[in-house]
Image (cartoon, rainbow, N blue to C red; front, side, top):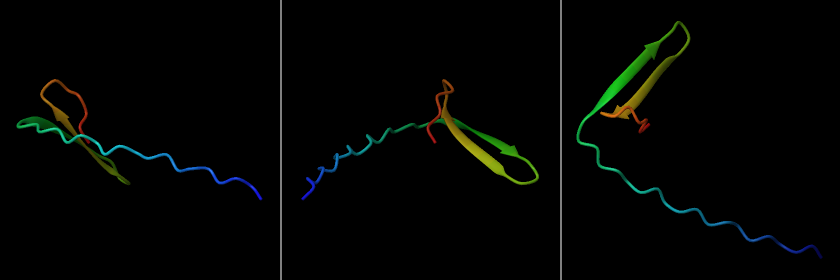
Amino acid sequence: MAERKRAVKQRRRERKNVPQGHVHIQATFNNTIITITDLNGAVIS
């Protein structure tokens, strides 16, 4: 019989508390892209 491989456990993401930030909205005919950044411009989601 073939050996089973163990699944790799994933860590939970650490939740970051960002009190202020920017929302960038790019709207086209087919899509709307919303990007949330902190004040330095680092993308959060």
